Image (cartoon, rainbow, N blue to C red; front, side):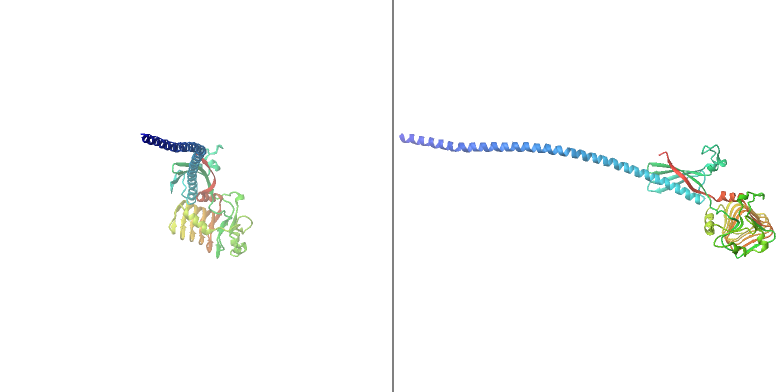
Length: 392
């Protein structure tokens, strides 16, 4: 029995020893778990703080980026709009260039629009109005149309378009003289081989009206003008004493002068041929009327009988006027010029051929009135006098 009691005491002692051994381990584990929890809580608290800091820094940056994007987007839209506006304006400016070209080629007509598609969504429309015939006092000076020289212009309204954008320009094209100002009743581009002025024929540089009465003395020119580098001495050598007396105008007879500048016969013929209003077939005609305008003949021409015409007659060859033929305006002749019987020219003549022959009672008479007719049919409204934008 004693032995049983001792065994029981021994088992209890061992049990208590094991309990004492486990207690520190449990306590250590509990403390470790508490430390981990504390670290985790600290870590969580630190992570939340960092997140707040990051958000505080990032949000303004995001807002700034968004604002920059919006600003740049707005600027891009404005720049694109301005580009479209400029392309529409360039289209309108192209319309002015087109109007000037039309004027130089005789295609600028009052009331007839010019429409062009430039491609790439660009186009323009030109509306020309000749102010001297529109029945309005355009500059409010009390005079209108033919009574007001200031209205001798074309008003050009151009609408330029790019996509759905329009720009409008108004420009004014004034007259530009095509014909050179003559310094003699007869102007020579070069020294001819021969000049013949016989019978009672004359070259008259004194201004004379179309009704054969005296004009304005201040408008008087020489009888014959020759282009430099030729000299009046060389010209004089082609005239005998009788012929010299038949060349009258500024100064004493013979009234000769070297022109201030040479005129370009080739360029003049080319320019006039492109704006000619009629092109008679080369040949010989009797009693024909050329009408009023620019007549261009590419070859030799003979007008006989009572043939008439006014304006500008361009002959790319030889010209013969015979009988009672009369022309009021300007002759431009690349070949020989011959006037016979009682043929008359009132205005001026330009010649470049090897021979000038004036016989019978024929004559070339300088006439300011004749020149005005020539200028009225030949001048081109291509002189830009200014432009401005309207109604954007």
